[in-house]
Image (cartoon, rainbow, N blue to C red; front, top):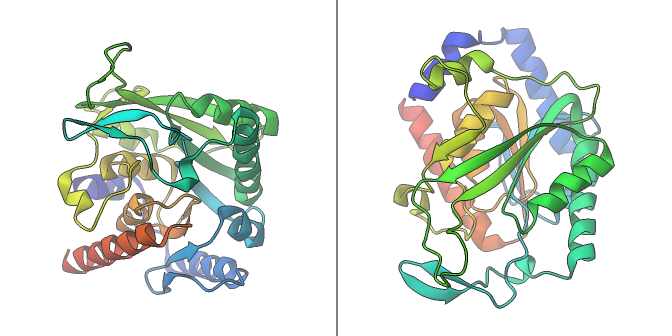
Amino acid sequence: MFIEGLEMSHAAIKDTPVKQKTVDKFVRIVSQIKEDPFFKDLEKEVYLYKQDCLNILSQIPENSIDMIFADPPYFLSNGGITCYAGRMVSVDKGQWDKSKGVQANHEFNKNWLSACQRVLTPNGTIWVSGTSHIIYSVGFAMQELGFKILNDISWFKINPPPNLSCRYFTHSTETVIWAAKNKDSRHYFNYSLMKEINGGKQMKSLWDIYPPKNGEKTYGKHPTQKPLALLNRIVLASTGRSDIVLDPFNGSGTTGVSAFSQGRKYIGIELEKQYLDVSVKRLKDAFREKERS
């Protein structure tokens, strides 16, 4: 609630006619999608779809989404190992995370990024998270497509798992690229709020944020789940109240929980039912939390 309260002190609530206009915009967007949603709450303005993101994105009107957060497959499930709870385990997140080769992986990134670029508003922005295994392909694809790269955020995981092979430095960061739709975009940035959160100093592009807390995994976990604190900062930094946020790789729904909790509208797209089930439970918790506050 502290972060939400801070935002309220810096941005006036939209008046009724403007709020009604944004509601109508959200309804127009979801009414264009022919597939039935996996979950919807029109009053809360949250929709989830169990579909390939390219299918849903192709049905969303051009220039309609204010902000996108994407955490695409890292293509790591190819026989490698990692550390979990102090034990060596194989990296097998599922078929969706298996690499088909460098060229195919890059083509995949370019295709979904192009689809996202089409639906972003002229001043909309996109955030993409990834490790070294995929983030360079994402950045190059953005350059090919004409996005305007604004920042590369280094998310420092304060308590990362150890490196079991002892042949590399311990992996303790992920990169989050923040980009505007194109070179002509005049992107929104809540500079004053970010400065206030950072104790009155300009916020740097190195963010110290713990991995997801146990309470964020109550209903199950996703192998690349992001902490709510990370998404809260992203949502508050780059959107205004009632803006429309979309996540093409919804996962366990952290983006949706953050967007709803901060007064934004949300569209999430995910292929795996097990993660959508987790998302729905987390969202319903967020609904109850807001009703109590």
